[in-house]
Amino acid sequence: GAVVSQHPSRVICKSGTSVKIECRSLDFQATTMFWYRQFPKQSLMLMATSNEGSKATYEQGVEKDKFLINHASLTLSTLTVTSAHPEDSSFYICSATPPTLSGYTFGSGTRLTVV
Amino acid sequence: AQRVTQPEKLLSVFKGAPVELKCNYSYSGSPELFWYVQYSRQRLQLLLRHISRESIKGFTADLNKGETSFHLKKPFAQEEDSAMYYCALSGAEGGSQGNLIFGKGTKLSVKP
Image 1: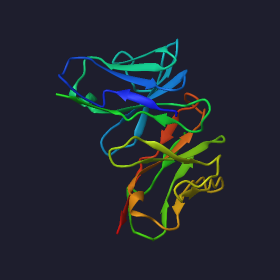
Image 2: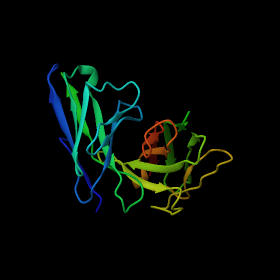
Image 3: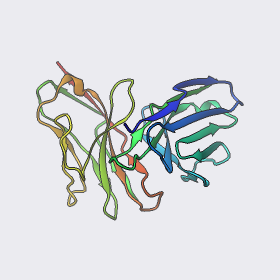
């Protein structure tokens, strides 16, 4: 139980286009989900906290208009990278906390490559 | 400021040898500490948390508030332990409650 599914696992897009990444909690409801970004050989960095039914909370330095987060239901949060540029190429991971379990469950991540 | 430090980028040991992955943190309140592991090409998964004080896959970690450390230990390393290990802290200070702050990770390589 407590599975977080992330899709797609890998995406290549052209510079200037937008890409949507989905994060779903498959067997539990998540009022809060978290989006992380991992640069090569660096640690995971929290980008934003996605709150169901309300606006996301962004960490300092993260552009809200570039990384659009929508948490329309208790099982789905989406991250849209708008007008993507090569510097947006990275590994994006979402996570959520099942209410009955300890710790955080992570999605398998999405490798975004902007060419 | 809250911070997690993993001083070693790479730790290489031989099978059967003891292993200790270091983690130090900076946090003014009462943090919750975790260890996460990422095996090659797999998702990040929780290894253990200090509150539960359990041993997973032979690994243990004790929270030392005096030294602000949460080192991960295993008495006899196995080849399948080779992975990337992340120490993480969760706290409400200065950020969204419940979010995690990760160390940079330590790559453990267990040689046969």
